[in-house]
Amino acid sequence: MPLPRPSSADPKKLYQWATQFVQAMETGKSIILPLALIDTQTLLAAAASVTFQVPQDFSHLFLIANQESSSGATGSCWRANGDSGTGYFWEEIDGIGAGVNAGGAASVTSARFSVAWGVGNPSASFTVFPAYRAPLLKRSLSVMTGYDGANLNTRVLGSLWQSTAPITSLTLLQDTGVNFVANSTFSLYGLR
Image (cartoon, rainbow, N blue to C red; front, side, top):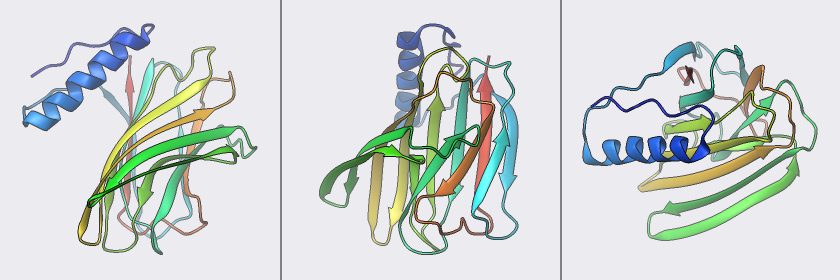
């Protein structure tokens, strides 16, 4: 089922498009995304970070990650343009087994886009960076499902980078300083 391309300037249409995408996934329908692959990086060995150079000819960015951390549960985070200052914020709501939790952080050096559960427990995430080059505050919305031992984990995150600069590079890292393990894969797509 082809999904119509959302307007690059209208956040409501982007939200509607993302909602249609999630509904198609939930019902098991085949979908065709009008996305262009920018780059895929599959780690051949453990690494502390992954960096993408971001072209400026798209309206929105989409990051699809399948990852594990080298030690226990840790937050998978992003930084834009090498900025390691304290201009990032994130909030999350998650369900683990029968429990529900919420959390977040303000004025931190990176913003979460997912959680990596440790060796043997891969997690997957689909992250949207809407209007990444528009002269607005940069925002990220992520929907993530993963596996934590015997429990399914479903998580929704929102994050913010307080800068009006367009995103020209995107660095992914763990918030506890551990590594992504070998075979973790990160794919960055653009939508015109």
